[in-house]
Amino acid sequence: MQSSLLSHFSSLSPGLQEDCFYRSAIVILAAAGGLLAAKLWRHGLHTALLSKLSVSEQPLGPFLVVYKTVTGPYNAVPQAHKELSRLMVDVGFVHHTMRGRHPFLTVLHDNPKLRPAESCRASVGFIYKSSAELRTPEDAQRYEKLLRCFTAVKKGEVQVALFPRSRCLAVEAPFLSPLSTIVASLRGYPMLTAALQKQPAKVQQQLQGSLEVYLPEQGKAVLAFPLEPREQLIAGK
Image (tube, rainbow, N blue to C red):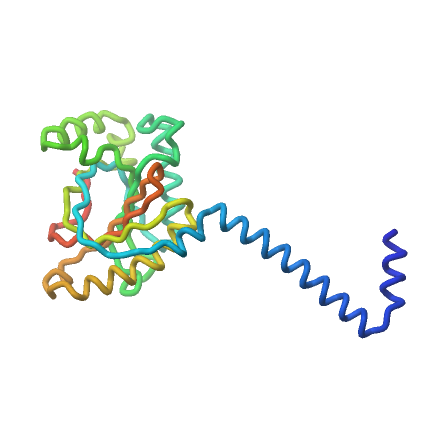
C-alpha cells in the first residue's frame, strides 16, 4: 500500500507534487494547532487571557505561614512550591488529599529588573491559618506554638511567620493552572505598577516587594503590593 502511494506521488508533475506537499503540511499544522488549543483550553488559558482585571485597594491577611526562602531566577519559584508542597505532606503539615489544593503564597522580595536574576529572593509558603481563624493575637500565638513542635521547623527546614493584615494594591485573576499564573503575572504586574505610580512618593519608596496569594479551591490568585511600611514583608521568628 505504501509503495503504491509513493509511486502515485512520483508520477505527478513537479507542480502537483509541490501542491500536495503544501496541502499536507497545512493539514498537519492545523491538526497540531487544534491539539495545542485544546490543551491550552484545558489549562484555563482562555479564561486567564479574556478575564477582566482591575486594581483595587484592599486588605490582605493576616496569614500564618509555613515557608522557606529561596534565591535565584523567579521562573524557578513554581518548582520551589512543588518541593515545599511535597515536604508539607511528608512531615504531616498537610494531608495528602489536600496536596496542590491548599492555599499558598509567594513573597517576591526583589525587582528582577533592578537585581541580577541569580540573587533575587523569594519566600514560598503555604497558608496554615488565615484571617477567619486568627481573630486575636492569642490565636496566632497558639497556632505558632503548635507549628514549632514539628521537627521540620526545629531543624530549620522551614520557618513560621505571621503576615499581618495589610493594606494593599491588588489584582484578582483566575487561577486554574500554572499557565494561568504566568498570564496573570504578565497582565497584572503592569497594572499594579501603573497604580503604584499614582501613590505618594513616600509610599512608592517604602515598597519592599510583592505578595502573591493563590487559592486553588476558589480558582483565584491575588497579586498585590503591600502599602504599609515594615522592616520585612515576611520574617521567621
